[in-house]
Image (cartoon, rainbow over all chains, first blue to last red; front, side, top):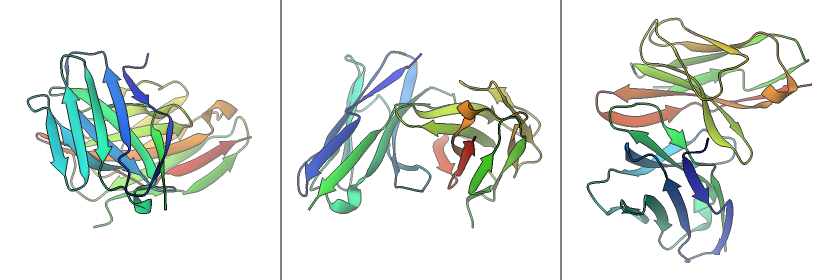
Length: 112
Length: 113
């Protein structure tokens, strides 16, 4: 069963726009929510992560927004650049559990 | 530091052949993972090892076996490859002790004919 639902599957945004990728989860035991970025031919790499004690976390141009009551979290990329073109995966894990459940991924393309 | 390394990078097998995918990490991490990545399916956990000598099944373990040879190495074996095992395989490691960041290798692209 898919415990983390990610949308959209693909997204095309013009340079400077703000792509938003959404994830929803079902397991209320999840308490760690990372986003991974993957470039073609490479392995995923951690981009940013949040725990449910805060509603927002920013690192540079990347922001996670977290809504605990709705069981949803999203990634926003400010001032997007062609170099941000990649596949993005959300994930989740319960407290003390080192196994991540990944979403299905979003292929993001930023056009100049 | 090389991080997480995987061999081979590419492999083509015929149905029924066997092979072992190798993974090694030089970050002294305790936990290691094997995932497969398929279009539209995301990353799915095949097997997990919390420490040397221990392994645990993930979401899609059927058709695979693993060995945690020592703290550095975690191998994935396909005993009798099937076309459904055509995928990109990623190995990852995790520091643990409260740090949940997984570090991924570059992947192995496997095609089973």
